[in-house]
Length: 118
Image (cartoon, rainbow, N blue to C red; front, top):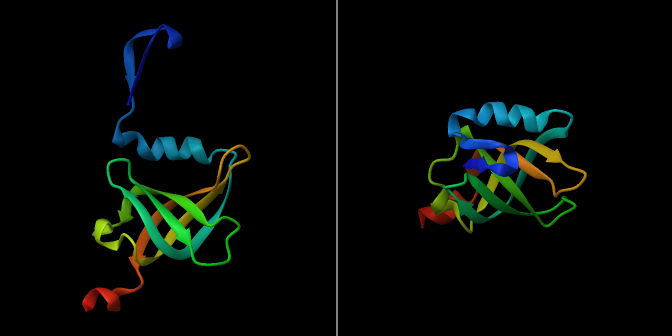
């Protein structure tokens, strides 16, 4: 991502690279209410370019679905094959005041592995 121009009073663009992810997550977490997240549901969307997922929750959540962001250390091999299947996600949930909640995942596991074996 690059930002530049008169609006930010900078001729050369500011560049955000993947290596800055941990620092940007630190900024995001500052003064945010967060809690451990351990949820399951159906994986409804996978965007590998942006590193995000959409999880339709099984039960027990206030919202029917939640956006999930992946970190560089997330164990997420084979995500495309998990699309439409039941998965369990571990990570940290952030509840914002002016935006929907989201999860930063540390691990994504396939739950209905028996269905894939058939």
